[in-house]
Amino acid sequence: MTCVANTKSAIKRIKIAERNRLRNKAYRSAVKTLIKKCLLAVQAGDAQAGELALQAAYSKIDKAVKRGVLHPNNGARKKARLARWLKQLQGQTVAASA
Image 1 (tube, rainbow, N blue to C red):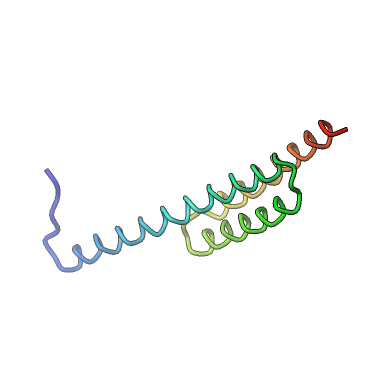
Image 2: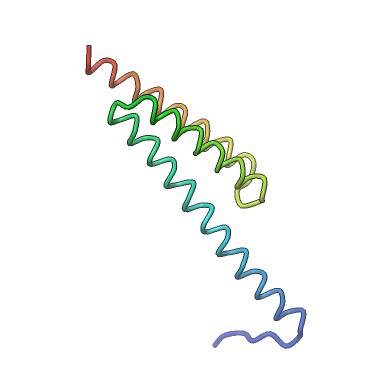
C-alpha cells in the first residue's frame, strides 16, 4: 500500500523530491560515463584524449559537488581514485611499449 499525501505542501515535496532524484541520477550517470571514457582512452594509448576526458570528468564531478548531488568528500575521492588509476595505466602502457 502506498502512502498518499494529504496536504498541498506534502504533494509539492513529493514532486520536488522526484525532480531532484532524476537530476541526481543524471549527474551520477554522467560522472560514471566520463570516468569510463577517461580510463578507456588511456588504455587505448591516446594520452591527449585521456587528458581531455580527465578534464571533463573533473569538471562534471565538481559541478555535481557544487549542486549537492555528491558529497564533497565523495567528489574528492572519485577524483583522487581516477588520477591514481590513470597513473597506473600510463605506467603499464609505457612498460608494455618499451
